Image (cartoon, rainbow over all chains, first blue to last red):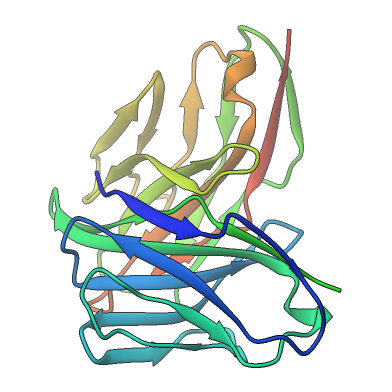
Length: 114
Length: 112
């Protein structure tokens, strides 16, 4: 099982601030993902990466951006936060095991934009 | 495209009751199937998975069988506990893009 860390766990900020949500994993997984979870619990893939210097947009359009300069690190940045960005953000990484690629999740960051 | 439909909640049970959460899917090819659990204030944890037809995944008393003929992967537990109260997500992974398609989640509350 993967060790995935997300910081901060909770963040309350004002509109217009720039923020970076951190995600790190210690298992050397090549593939990493960011999900946004709305209050109704539904999960939406917003970014993913298959390795260093690889980033792709997910199924849900997002104003956030990501970078993957190191294998273990996949930060998400919002240049100018708005109340509509209030949500739970979950990071995951995956490895091929047991005949399939399996994703493991971090504890999440709950973001509130006032 | 791929999709997952799971039982709408919330589901409320008494301790020691039998649990079933239905999950059906639509996918091309032969997807892998997963159940994840999310406890309050936490991220998702892998509960169990199955990679081919008739496989049974099991963990912590939970079971699910990959049924290709009915395109289903229903989650079951014989006797739930208060500590099983959580949101349960069914998901599939198909093709070569490694992405997961999730159901909308089912909130389970178990009362003592």
